[in-house]
Length: 393
Image (tube, rainbow, N blue to C red; front, side):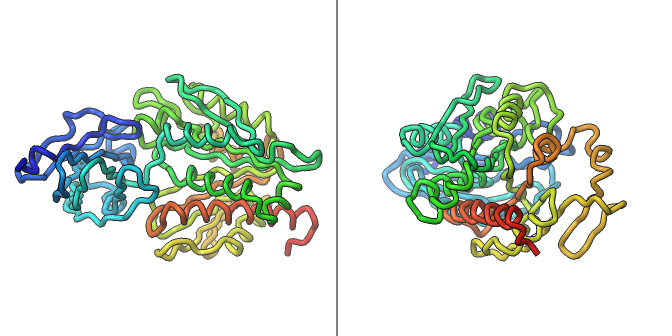
């Protein structure tokens, strides 16, 4: 009978994998043990190192125990690296695994079923997944899908919108995801949103009479494919979440799409690693306040809400409870080097009601994220309707 040392293997050389270099993966001293060193875009003192995903292959006929020791090269930010996600190839959802952390090493043990499994710091959503979803949606008569452009490496960036036939008075709402390569929740949220819009639900039909919903789900296909934390490339890459960044075709695609759509409401979808905190980072107090009131709890872990907005009357940064208020007059100085975020860009260029949301993964399933996407879409529309009809408090 083959030994587990012979039937088990670990690799990061796949779409979304990190580390790609097999030299960063070695067998440990014990049978079924592997030591993995993730790769970083920048030195560990300059970023958090939130990119890790490997494929575990069990070539035998029976399940076998495996232990993976993840050496992060630094003890910094290990508070974000004690929970991992496991998926068996072909399954939709991911299950959480608690890791034992000692210094800079996180150790995860589980049973490797025959075939391929994936272990990642967050549930994965690959470049191939994004193409498959865009292809499926492009086959529908009630969705429009266009190739918005290509990345530096020639990967496709698709823009989708619904309804396909737009009412003349419908306001554009724009959802952007995956500026940061490792932040996958936005892809699942957009899947939930689009599925809701084409479901035939009367609530969705009513919303599509008043709004047209635009989606750029995979804005950073190079970084996502290459298993990076943030940028479009490990060398000289762009940080797509900022208006001023390194020159990059993917950045240009985002700008062109926003300038074409000129959204009335803009939402950038992120997930940070503060696991018990949902961030509602809005340009307007109304949206920060009402989102906190309208969004439901999601998942098994309680998430407190933190909010921020800009104020025309504040002269200094103010902390009030769970809210941070920034003086609008000082925003240009605060963002001088970066040009601000896309929500700032949309506010300044189009007068958009603009926001970024941060929904972390812990305690949430893939279906929780899809449902949270639907709830977010409905909430921002409800606030916009209140605003236009003068019903806000």
